[in-house]
Length: 110
Image 1 (tube, helix red, strand yellow):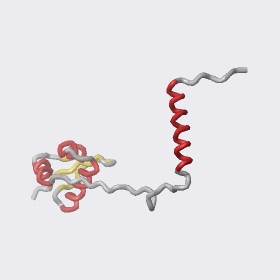
Image 2 (cartoon, one colour; image 1 turned 180 degrees about the vertical axis):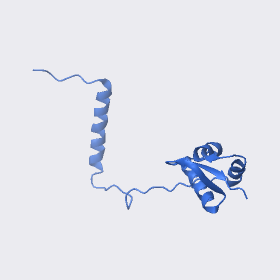
Image 3 (cartoon, rainbow, N blue to C red; image 1 turned 120 degrees about the horizontal axis):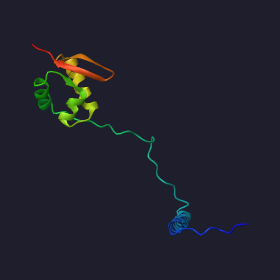
Image 4 (spheres, rainbow, N blue to C red; image 1 turned 60 degrees about the horizontal axis):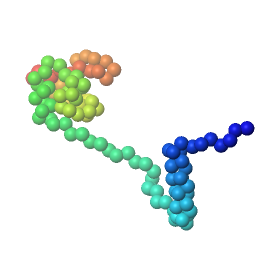
């Protein structure tokens, strides 16, 4: 009943590009594509925290949160969380409150 629909200029251009890529694909038919061995691998990202600046901020604060430290140092929350956990393990700060990842830390008075 209906005839063929007229394609928009963008659709015509796409179809021409597909046709040209098919033709070039036929030329390279005998060649295999190189694939990386072992599939995809994740890159390990390390962020260094300026410890001098962080310790200055921690000593001048009554309490510290992970989010507040991250904002002040300009690093990701995961980096500041790792740093505060390390300080907690060393005994420089202690966890005094919070819940569900939103912990509050305080410096240990010597």
